[in-house]
Length: 395
Image (cartoon, rainbow, N blue to C red; front, side, top):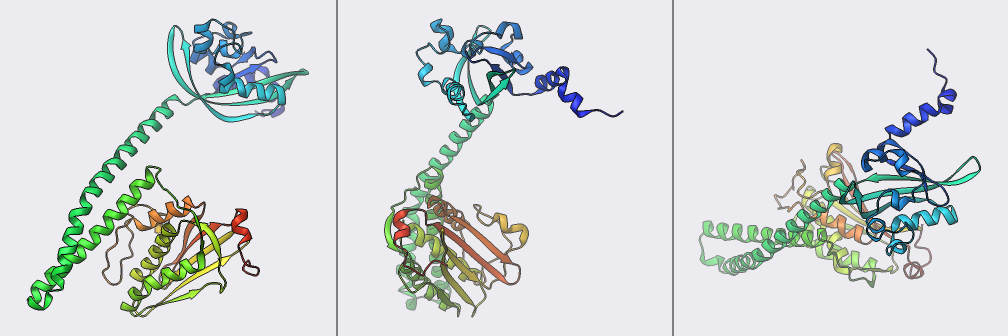
Protein backbone atom coordinates (compact mmCIF):
# COMPACT_ATOMS: atom_id res chain seq x y z
CA UNK A 1 0.00 0.00 0.00
CA UNK A 2 1.44 3.32 -1.07
CA UNK A 3 1.41 6.06 1.54
CA UNK A 4 1.07 9.56 0.11
CA UNK A 5 3.50 11.73 2.06
CA UNK A 6 1.76 14.96 1.10
CA UNK A 7 -1.50 13.57 2.40
CA UNK A 8 0.11 12.60 5.69
CA UNK A 9 1.61 16.05 6.12
CA UNK A 10 -1.80 17.62 5.68
CA UNK A 11 -3.44 15.24 8.11
CA UNK A 12 -4.15 16.87 11.48
CA UNK A 13 -4.42 13.46 13.06
CA UNK A 14 -0.96 12.48 11.81
CA UNK A 15 0.63 15.75 12.96
CA UNK A 16 -1.02 15.52 16.37
CA UNK A 17 0.28 11.97 16.74
CA UNK A 18 3.80 13.12 15.93
CA UNK A 19 3.54 16.07 18.32
CA UNK A 20 2.31 13.92 21.17
CA UNK A 21 5.16 11.44 20.76
CA UNK A 22 7.88 14.08 20.96
CA UNK A 23 9.56 13.89 24.37
CA UNK A 24 10.27 17.64 24.43
CA UNK A 25 7.63 19.94 25.87
CA UNK A 26 6.03 21.96 23.06
CA UNK A 27 3.96 25.11 23.66
CA UNK A 28 2.32 27.34 21.06
CA UNK A 29 1.67 30.84 22.44
CA UNK A 30 -0.23 33.79 21.03
CA UNK A 31 1.02 37.39 21.12
CA UNK A 32 -0.25 37.76 24.70
CA UNK A 33 1.97 34.79 25.65
CA UNK A 34 -1.14 32.72 26.35
CA UNK A 35 -0.99 28.99 25.68
CA UNK A 36 -2.95 27.95 22.60
CA UNK A 37 -1.60 24.46 22.09
CA UNK A 38 0.55 21.91 23.94
CA UNK A 39 1.72 18.36 23.28
CA UNK A 40 1.35 15.21 25.34
CA UNK A 41 4.71 15.67 27.08
CA UNK A 42 3.43 18.88 28.71
CA UNK A 43 0.29 17.13 29.94
CA UNK A 44 2.38 14.29 31.34
CA UNK A 45 4.89 16.47 33.22
CA UNK A 46 2.40 18.91 34.72
CA UNK A 47 -0.33 16.30 35.20
CA UNK A 48 -2.81 18.62 33.49
CA UNK A 49 -5.18 18.27 30.55
CA UNK A 50 -4.83 20.63 27.61
CA UNK A 51 -8.02 22.47 28.58
CA UNK A 52 -6.55 23.24 32.01
CA UNK A 53 -3.58 25.06 30.47
CA UNK A 54 -5.12 26.73 27.41
CA UNK A 55 -5.37 30.55 27.57
CA UNK A 56 -3.08 30.74 30.58
CA UNK A 57 0.01 32.96 30.30
CA UNK A 58 3.11 30.80 29.89
CA UNK A 59 4.55 31.33 33.38
CA UNK A 60 1.20 30.58 35.00
CA UNK A 61 0.70 27.52 32.81
CA UNK A 62 3.98 25.97 33.98
CA UNK A 63 3.15 27.10 37.53
CA UNK A 64 6.29 29.18 38.05
CA UNK A 65 6.83 29.50 41.81
CA UNK A 66 6.95 33.30 41.63
CA UNK A 67 3.57 33.48 39.90
CA UNK A 68 2.02 30.97 42.29
CA UNK A 69 3.42 32.35 45.54
CA UNK A 70 2.91 36.02 44.66
CA UNK A 71 -0.49 35.23 43.11
CA UNK A 72 0.32 37.34 40.09
CA UNK A 73 0.17 36.95 36.35
CA UNK A 74 3.35 36.03 34.52
CA UNK A 75 5.18 39.18 33.32
CA UNK A 76 4.17 40.98 36.55
CA UNK A 77 6.05 39.10 39.28
CA UNK A 78 9.09 40.41 41.15
CA UNK A 79 11.37 38.09 39.15
CA UNK A 80 10.07 38.57 35.60
CA UNK A 81 12.67 41.18 34.64
CA UNK A 82 15.42 38.64 35.38
CA UNK A 83 13.63 35.57 34.06
CA UNK A 84 15.34 33.78 31.16
CA UNK A 85 11.99 32.51 29.89
CA UNK A 86 10.56 36.03 29.91
CA UNK A 87 13.60 37.49 28.14
CA UNK A 88 13.54 34.82 25.44
CA UNK A 89 9.80 35.24 24.83
CA UNK A 90 10.07 39.04 24.69
CA UNK A 91 12.91 38.84 22.17
CA UNK A 92 11.03 36.59 19.80
CA UNK A 93 7.79 38.54 20.25
CA UNK A 94 9.23 42.02 19.75
CA UNK A 95 12.13 41.32 17.38
CA UNK A 96 11.19 37.92 15.94
CA UNK A 97 14.64 36.73 17.06
CA UNK A 98 14.81 33.06 18.11
CA UNK A 99 16.41 31.77 21.28
CA UNK A 100 18.48 28.59 21.03
CA UNK A 101 19.17 26.12 23.84
CA UNK A 102 18.92 28.62 26.70
CA UNK A 103 19.35 27.03 30.14
CA UNK A 104 17.09 28.06 32.99
CA UNK A 105 16.77 26.78 36.57
CA UNK A 106 13.39 27.36 38.15
CA UNK A 107 11.15 26.24 41.00
CA UNK A 108 7.75 25.18 39.71
CA UNK A 109 4.71 23.48 41.20
CA UNK A 110 3.61 20.07 39.97
CA UNK A 111 0.33 19.37 41.66
CA UNK A 112 0.80 20.92 45.07
CA UNK A 113 4.47 20.00 45.32
CA UNK A 114 7.23 22.55 44.74
CA UNK A 115 10.11 21.09 42.71
CA UNK A 116 13.31 22.48 41.27
CA UNK A 117 13.79 21.92 37.57
CA UNK A 118 16.51 22.69 35.05
CA UNK A 119 15.21 23.29 31.54
CA UNK A 120 16.79 24.04 28.18
CA UNK A 121 14.41 25.96 25.90
CA UNK A 122 14.27 27.21 22.32
CA UNK A 123 11.83 29.81 20.99
CA UNK A 124 10.85 30.60 17.42
CA UNK A 125 8.41 32.96 15.73
CA UNK A 126 5.75 31.27 13.58
CA UNK A 127 2.75 32.47 11.57
CA UNK A 128 -0.51 30.55 11.49
CA UNK A 129 -3.60 31.82 9.64
CA UNK A 130 -2.00 35.29 9.47
CA UNK A 131 -1.53 35.31 13.24
CA UNK A 132 1.89 35.83 14.79
CA UNK A 133 2.62 33.12 17.32
CA UNK A 134 5.53 31.72 19.33
CA UNK A 135 6.65 28.11 19.48
CA UNK A 136 8.48 27.17 22.67
CA UNK A 137 10.32 23.83 22.85
CA UNK A 138 11.47 22.88 26.35
CA UNK A 139 13.64 19.94 27.42
CA UNK A 140 13.77 18.81 31.04
CA UNK A 141 17.49 18.26 31.78
CA UNK A 142 17.16 18.18 35.57
CA UNK A 143 18.67 14.72 36.01
CA UNK A 144 21.50 15.46 33.58
CA UNK A 145 22.27 18.66 35.47
CA UNK A 146 22.36 16.78 38.79
CA UNK A 147 24.75 14.23 37.30
CA UNK A 148 26.94 17.01 35.90
CA UNK A 149 27.14 18.74 39.27
CA UNK A 150 27.94 15.49 41.07
CA UNK A 151 30.67 14.79 38.52
CA UNK A 152 32.11 18.27 39.01
CA UNK A 153 32.19 17.73 42.77
CA UNK A 154 33.91 14.36 42.32
CA UNK A 155 36.51 15.79 39.94
CA UNK A 156 37.11 18.74 42.28
CA UNK A 157 37.59 16.40 45.25
CA UNK A 158 39.94 14.20 43.21
CA UNK A 159 42.02 17.20 42.13
CA UNK A 160 42.18 18.53 45.68
CA UNK A 161 43.30 15.15 47.01
CA UNK A 162 45.81 14.73 44.18
CA UNK A 163 47.22 18.20 44.75
CA UNK A 164 47.56 17.62 48.51
CA UNK A 165 49.21 14.21 48.20
CA UNK A 166 51.66 15.22 45.47
CA UNK A 167 52.57 18.42 47.30
CA UNK A 168 53.32 16.45 50.46
CA UNK A 169 55.44 13.99 48.48
CA UNK A 170 57.58 16.68 46.90
CA UNK A 171 59.79 17.45 49.91
CA UNK A 172 60.79 13.86 50.83
CA UNK A 173 61.41 13.02 47.16
CA UNK A 174 63.60 16.09 46.75
CA UNK A 175 65.49 15.13 49.91
CA UNK A 176 66.16 11.64 48.54
CA UNK A 177 67.26 13.11 45.22
CA UNK A 178 69.62 15.61 46.88
CA UNK A 179 71.17 13.01 49.18
CA UNK A 180 71.71 10.56 46.32
CA UNK A 181 73.32 13.36 44.27
CA UNK A 182 75.63 14.10 47.19
CA UNK A 183 76.56 10.42 47.50
CA UNK A 184 77.28 10.23 43.78
CA UNK A 185 79.99 12.84 44.34
CA UNK A 186 81.61 10.35 46.68
CA UNK A 187 81.37 7.51 44.14
CA UNK A 188 85.16 7.04 43.94
CA UNK A 189 85.07 5.77 47.54
CA UNK A 190 82.43 3.12 46.79
CA UNK A 191 82.38 -0.28 45.22
CA UNK A 192 80.90 -0.63 41.73
CA UNK A 193 77.82 -2.29 43.19
CA UNK A 194 77.24 0.63 45.56
CA UNK A 195 77.75 3.18 42.76
CA UNK A 196 75.10 1.51 40.61
CA UNK A 197 72.78 1.33 43.60
CA UNK A 198 73.13 5.08 44.32
CA UNK A 199 72.73 5.87 40.59
CA UNK A 200 69.47 3.91 40.51
CA UNK A 201 68.20 5.78 43.56
CA UNK A 202 69.01 9.12 41.95
CA UNK A 203 67.36 8.26 38.62
CA UNK A 204 64.19 6.92 40.27
CA UNK A 205 63.92 9.95 42.57
CA UNK A 206 64.45 12.24 39.57
CA UNK A 207 61.62 10.46 37.74
CA UNK A 208 59.37 10.68 40.82
CA UNK A 209 60.12 14.39 41.12
CA UNK A 210 59.05 14.94 37.48
CA UNK A 211 55.93 12.85 38.06
CA UNK A 212 54.97 14.92 41.12
CA UNK A 213 55.49 18.14 39.17
CA UNK A 214 53.36 16.84 36.30
CA UNK A 215 50.60 15.67 38.64
CA UNK A 216 50.54 19.08 40.34
CA UNK A 217 50.38 20.82 36.95
CA UNK A 218 47.55 18.57 35.82
CA UNK A 219 45.54 18.94 39.03
CA UNK A 220 45.82 22.75 38.82
CA UNK A 221 44.76 22.78 35.17
CA UNK A 222 41.81 20.44 35.70
CA UNK A 223 40.69 22.60 38.62
CA UNK A 224 40.45 25.54 36.24
CA UNK A 225 43.61 27.12 37.63
CA UNK A 226 45.62 27.41 34.41
CA UNK A 227 46.98 30.87 35.01
CA UNK A 228 48.72 32.36 31.99
CA UNK A 229 51.22 35.15 32.48
CA UNK A 230 50.85 36.69 29.03
CA UNK A 231 53.68 38.98 27.98
CA UNK A 232 55.25 40.06 24.71
CA UNK A 233 58.18 37.80 23.83
CA UNK A 234 60.18 36.90 20.73
CA UNK A 235 58.72 33.50 19.93
CA UNK A 236 61.61 32.54 17.63
CA UNK A 237 64.04 33.16 20.49
CA UNK A 238 61.89 31.01 22.81
CA UNK A 239 62.09 28.11 20.34
CA UNK A 240 65.86 28.60 20.00
CA UNK A 241 66.24 28.52 23.79
CA UNK A 242 64.30 25.26 24.02
CA UNK A 243 66.47 23.67 21.34
CA UNK A 244 69.59 24.85 23.18
CA UNK A 245 68.31 23.29 26.44
CA UNK A 246 67.62 19.94 24.78
CA UNK A 247 70.68 19.76 22.52
CA UNK A 248 72.95 18.18 25.21
CA UNK A 249 70.36 15.42 25.80
CA UNK A 250 70.26 14.75 22.07
CA UNK A 251 74.05 14.63 21.80
CA UNK A 252 74.17 11.92 24.48
CA UNK A 253 72.34 9.68 22.01
CA UNK A 254 74.36 10.90 19.04
CA UNK A 255 71.43 12.96 17.73
CA UNK A 256 71.33 16.41 16.23
CA UNK A 257 68.48 18.92 16.49
CA UNK A 258 68.03 21.00 13.34
CA UNK A 259 66.27 24.34 13.55
CA UNK A 260 64.13 25.63 10.68
CA UNK A 261 62.79 29.03 11.75
CA UNK A 262 62.53 32.52 10.24
CA UNK A 263 65.59 34.70 10.63
CA UNK A 264 63.63 37.67 11.95
CA UNK A 265 62.01 38.10 15.38
CA UNK A 266 58.36 37.16 15.86
CA UNK A 267 56.99 39.04 18.85
CA UNK A 268 53.81 37.56 20.31
CA UNK A 269 51.90 37.67 23.59
CA UNK A 270 52.14 34.34 25.44
CA UNK A 271 53.20 32.72 28.69
CA UNK A 272 56.92 32.09 28.22
CA UNK A 273 57.31 29.43 30.90
CA UNK A 274 54.23 27.48 29.82
CA UNK A 275 55.06 27.44 26.11
CA UNK A 276 58.71 26.55 26.61
CA UNK A 277 57.38 23.66 28.74
CA UNK A 278 55.34 22.51 25.73
CA UNK A 279 58.26 22.78 23.30
CA UNK A 280 60.62 21.05 25.75
CA UNK A 281 58.14 18.21 26.09
CA UNK A 282 57.80 17.69 22.35
CA UNK A 283 61.56 17.81 21.76
CA UNK A 284 62.22 15.62 24.82
CA UNK A 285 59.77 13.00 23.53
CA UNK A 286 61.41 13.06 20.12
CA UNK A 287 64.77 12.37 21.79
CA UNK A 288 63.34 9.59 23.98
CA UNK A 289 61.62 7.71 21.17
CA UNK A 290 64.18 8.16 18.36
CA UNK A 291 67.05 5.83 17.57
CA UNK A 292 70.62 6.89 18.22
CA UNK A 293 72.38 9.03 15.60
CA UNK A 294 69.10 10.25 14.11
CA UNK A 295 67.93 13.79 13.36
CA UNK A 296 65.17 15.87 14.95
CA UNK A 297 63.84 18.94 13.15
CA UNK A 298 62.12 21.82 14.92
CA UNK A 299 60.31 24.28 12.65
CA UNK A 300 58.19 27.43 12.87
CA UNK A 301 55.95 28.71 10.09
CA UNK A 302 53.38 31.49 9.86
CA UNK A 303 50.25 31.79 7.77
CA UNK A 304 47.56 34.47 7.85
CA UNK A 305 45.93 33.11 11.01
CA UNK A 306 48.43 31.01 12.98
CA UNK A 307 52.00 30.41 14.03
CA UNK A 308 52.58 26.68 13.62
CA UNK A 309 55.44 24.94 15.46
CA UNK A 310 56.49 21.44 14.44
CA UNK A 311 58.81 18.81 15.92
CA UNK A 312 59.73 15.99 13.54
CA UNK A 313 61.43 12.75 14.51
CA UNK A 314 62.36 9.60 12.64
CA UNK A 315 61.48 7.19 15.41
CA UNK A 316 59.17 4.15 15.36
CA UNK A 317 56.02 6.16 14.68
CA UNK A 318 52.61 5.67 16.25
CA UNK A 319 50.13 2.97 15.15
CA UNK A 320 47.01 4.46 13.57
CA UNK A 321 44.72 3.00 16.22
CA UNK A 322 46.76 4.70 19.00
CA UNK A 323 46.93 8.23 17.56
CA UNK A 324 43.72 9.33 19.34
CA UNK A 325 45.21 8.26 22.68
CA UNK A 326 48.41 10.28 22.42
CA UNK A 327 47.14 13.33 24.35
CA UNK A 328 45.33 11.37 27.08
CA UNK A 329 46.67 10.99 30.62
CA UNK A 330 48.72 7.83 31.25
CA UNK A 331 48.20 6.54 27.70
CA UNK A 332 49.52 3.00 27.36
CA UNK A 333 51.08 3.19 23.90
CA UNK A 334 53.11 0.48 22.26
CA UNK A 335 56.15 2.68 21.50
CA UNK A 336 58.90 2.60 24.13
CA UNK A 337 61.83 4.97 24.76
CA UNK A 338 64.90 3.75 22.86
CA UNK A 339 67.31 4.50 25.71
CA UNK A 340 65.19 3.16 28.58
CA UNK A 341 64.27 6.71 29.58
CA UNK A 342 61.43 7.18 32.05
CA UNK A 343 58.16 8.80 30.97
CA UNK A 344 55.39 10.03 33.29
CA UNK A 345 52.67 9.70 30.65
CA UNK A 346 51.35 13.17 31.48
CA UNK A 347 53.51 15.53 29.43
CA UNK A 348 51.41 15.58 26.25
CA UNK A 349 48.14 15.85 28.21
CA UNK A 350 49.53 18.92 29.98
CA UNK A 351 50.90 20.32 26.71
CA UNK A 352 47.45 20.00 25.13
CA UNK A 353 45.81 21.99 27.92
CA UNK A 354 48.48 24.70 27.80
CA UNK A 355 48.15 25.11 24.03
CA UNK A 356 44.36 25.17 24.25
CA UNK A 357 44.68 27.75 27.03
CA UNK A 358 46.43 29.94 24.45
CA UNK A 359 43.46 29.34 22.08
CA UNK A 360 45.61 27.05 19.95
CA UNK A 361 45.48 23.44 18.82
CA UNK A 362 47.91 20.51 19.02
CA UNK A 363 47.97 17.39 16.86
CA UNK A 364 50.24 14.68 15.44
CA UNK A 365 50.86 13.10 12.05
CA UNK A 366 52.62 9.76 12.21
CA UNK A 367 53.56 6.89 9.92
CA UNK A 368 54.42 3.62 11.59
CA UNK A 369 58.08 2.78 11.03
CA UNK A 370 58.93 6.23 9.63
CA UNK A 371 58.42 8.69 12.47
CA UNK A 372 56.10 11.38 13.76
CA UNK A 373 55.54 15.11 13.46
CA UNK A 374 53.93 16.91 16.38
CA UNK A 375 52.39 20.30 15.61
CA UNK A 376 50.80 23.03 17.65
CA UNK A 377 49.33 26.31 16.50
CA UNK A 378 48.99 29.69 18.18
CA UNK A 379 46.44 32.13 16.77
CA UNK A 380 47.35 35.51 15.31
CA UNK A 381 43.92 36.95 16.00
CA UNK A 382 44.89 39.95 18.14
CA UNK A 383 45.71 43.30 16.57
CA UNK A 384 48.82 43.61 18.75
CA UNK A 385 50.21 40.28 17.56
CA UNK A 386 49.48 40.97 13.91
CA UNK A 387 51.14 44.39 14.02
CA UNK A 388 54.35 42.86 15.34
CA UNK A 389 54.80 40.27 12.57
CA UNK A 390 57.57 41.39 10.20
CA UNK A 391 56.74 41.72 6.52
CA UNK A 392 57.52 38.61 4.51
CA UNK A 393 57.04 36.15 7.37
CA UNK A 394 53.52 35.14 6.40
CA UNK A 395 53.38 32.55 3.65
